[in-house]
Length: 126
Image 1: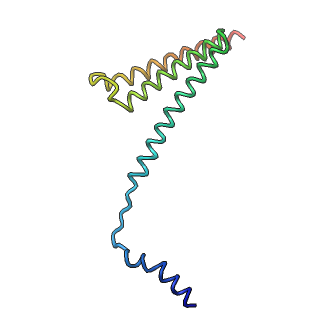
Image 2: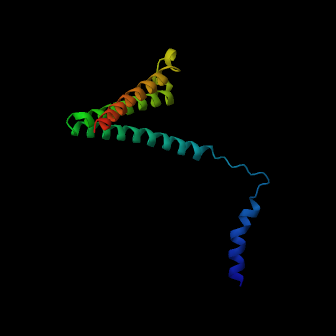
Image 3: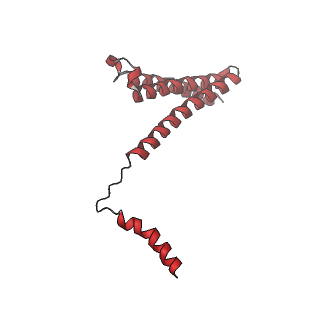
């Protein structure tokens, strides 16, 4: 019985002695770590998927589907470059920081739309 009391007191006494009336929990550290990990993983995933699409487009050795995959891969890379230039504005000249990411994203989406149009043209012919 005395052993259990000693264990109980040794566990709860520090929490009572060091208890504070105002407790503020700062989540800024863990949140910033999670945000940086998610940012890095999103960029890495964008690079990997773009490379996979380009490689698969090359493996098809031309043709309509190979051309469509190549255009999709190029468009994905350009959109990824626009996203990176938006997230890291120090790599873009100061005069183009607001415009450059939007230009890249628009150009990338136009290229992917051209690829989709080519694919639609093939499916309508069948």
